[in-house]
Amino acid sequence: MQKNHSTKHALPLLQTALAAACAALWLAAAAPRPALADHEVVDGIKWVYETDDGKASLGAMAVPRSTEGTVTVPARLGGCPVEEIGDYAFYDCARITRIVLPKGVKRLGEHAFQNCTSLESVELPDSVDDMDGYYIFMDCTALKSVTLPRKVAAVGAYAFFGCSALETVEWPAALEEIGLSAFSHCRSLKEIHFPRKLDRIRPYAFCECDSLRTLVFPESLSVIQESAFYSCRALRELVLPKNLEGIGDNAFLNTGLERVTVLGNPEGDRTDWGRIWGLPKDCELSVPGQ
Image (tube, rainbow, N blue to C red; front, side):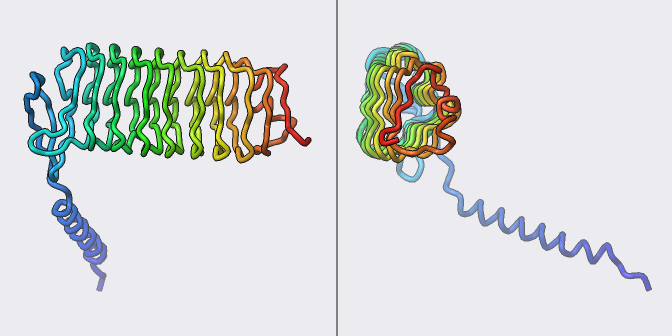
């Protein structure tokens, strides 16, 4: 008698489908309750926000684009403390000149202040510990200085890309990583003394910062990735720390470097370092003790 192969194969499929359905039901029950969008008028400004589990976050387009001058974010909205500046919260608010964030804010969302082209200053409280999102202050072309909160360990990709007026950055002691293109095209930066815990500089992090003349790296630095300082034309001299292990292709291409001192032993053939790193042909490469 012929066996019923269709029944034999259908049973595992049915069991799999039931298991998937049960998993979906469990995930739905375990998921946090959805955020509730709302608005509140404070000091004449209508704020759009969301609340979840007793915490508030500014929503996308948190204030009208016509908002101008100094803006102070309320410490509480909907009776809940504001802990997050959500994605796109102040996106394209081109008339705001100054933003003050309250103590208690922990996260800055992606695109949160992008294209705030009149923004000259922003006050970030030390409660902020998450700036790992993309495009946070991208193209804030009037921003002249920024003090990064002391708990920030990573600056996200494109965070200050195109902030062409940015002259000074106060770096937090906790900083370990600077993201992809985080400060690209910051054409007014002249001098950087990186903090002592910095470990990694991602690709194109300071690409085309063409006023940058001074770089001081900490001993903790282990990796400079490809094209990190591409086209920093004002650079003349550099000391690479002893613990630096990896330097990416063209990390210093199209710079004005005349002398580079290497205190450690980065990866690769020494005779090929200059070519790989993109150093100018007439740049003097010095290795003390060698």
